[in-house]
Amino acid sequence: MSSASPAVPHLSFPDGHTIPQLGYGVFKVADEIAADVTAQALEAGYRHIDTAKIYGNEEGVGRAIAASGIAREDLFVTTKLWNDAHRFEDAIAACEASLARLGLDYVDLYLVHWAVPGQGQYVEAWKALIELQERGLVRSIGVSNHPRPQLEEIIEATGVVPAIHQIELHPYFSQRELREVHQRRGILTQAWGPLGQGRSDLLENATIAAVAEAHGASPAQVVLAWHLAHGIVTIPKSVTPARIVENLAAVELRLTAEEVAAIDGLDRPDGRGGADPATKTA
Ligand SMILES: NC(=O)c1ccc[n+]([C@@H]2O[C@H](COP(=O)([O-])OP(=O)(O)OC[C@H]3O[C@@H](n4cnc5c(N)ncnc54)[C@H](OP(=O)(O)O)[C@@H]3O)[C@@H](O)[C@H]2O)c1
Image 1: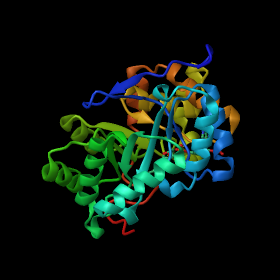
Image 2: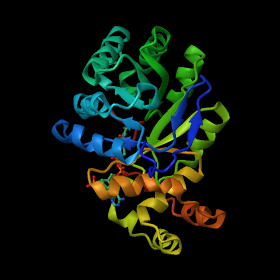
Image 3: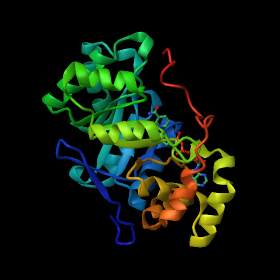
């Protein structure tokens, strides 16, 4: 890391590993540019990259990692199991294929991308991740987009608690109830779509704008600092060089308790922007 890069805090998993609290997401980044933008993120000081099989850019991400010269133990790489491979053997093969595309011997975190309750294979998928961890192909295991009943079911069925749960989460959809479940279970919360997937009404919100002005920060930095203040792991995506740098610098922004509370107040019943995990079918 260059000396000018901000220091990103790490949070601990019960399995003994740690995760940088702010990382770089690459959803909707074409494989052709993934190597370039990931290289920019690594150069800026990010050490945590969040990709997925379905993003189609594991190869580009892997090329950037290989070219970076950064020691493997200094990087944290996440990828995810897609919904068409929840059967045990399919999940094992899918992880091996992701590792091959990434050019890595292991990933730091492997997630079941969606529970897909109607498909009914999420317990089997979770058992495969437990096996992958035992085999050493993945350091830590977690889930994404699991409604509370399915989250509790995989824990009851296996006795293994996910290290982290990656869910849609931003000030308009702050997932208070699920975060409380996580806290009771010792699961870290990770936010996808932390900037509301770039929706202008969030980044132009008057409350956020006022906090930004008070700190001489950008609205995106304020939103990211709100995540960090709540102990949430956050993975903003940008392909814009200045924003890549700007988002990482949010780790240096400290909001007051009053500012955090004011942003908490922006939560809305209709705040969800993405698919509802309870009804996603494929
Ligand atoms: N588990 C899941 O199902 C799931 C679902 C979605 C996402 N994810 C993960 O979460 C990551 C983040 O979520 P996301 O990519 O959907 O949305 P996001 O990070 O909330 O928002 C990305 C959007 O915000 C814009 N943006 C970034 N920084 C900005 C800034 N400083 N000021 C203004 N606009 C800014 C980006 O534009 P530019 O790129 O044009 O700069 C892009 O349009 C993904 O990349 C992926 O790794 C996971």
